[in-house]
Image (cartoon, rainbow, N blue to C red; front, side, top):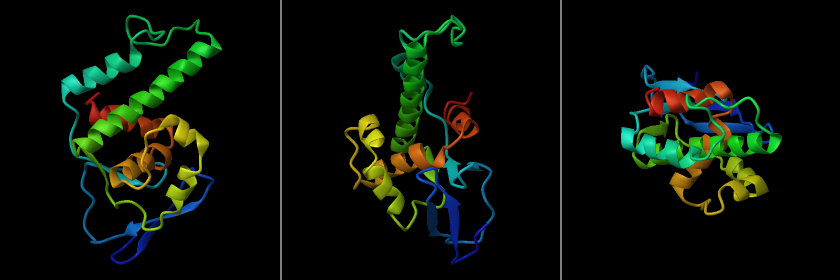
Length: 169
């Protein structure tokens, strides 16, 4: 853990580049609502989405999905159906994070990295442009969403925090 005036370094999942986080401002205890993700990024969860917003995201994302009555993936899905469901899961997580950012329910505990090299790599990545064609790489909130989606939340366990903390599930 970094001390006052030091920087915290984490390895990102973007080309295995080292990303230097913002300078740690204070040497204080970490609040209970801060989670250190597998990427080393610390995220603070400040509340859950309103139930109506969460319901809207679920209905919009998973209508016509190949799920059973309990919300479980059906066993007999074709590879195309599996890919479509994976895309829906990506959209689901992005929607939750977008709403959470707009409602100030989630924040990067240490802020965005001082060095914007991580953003340069995402900006030239055609997959990012395909996934988010309306993204503005110069707007801070867009940068925060990109950082959360492509750097911070790197594993299935990390993604589980999205539902657990932001949907109270």
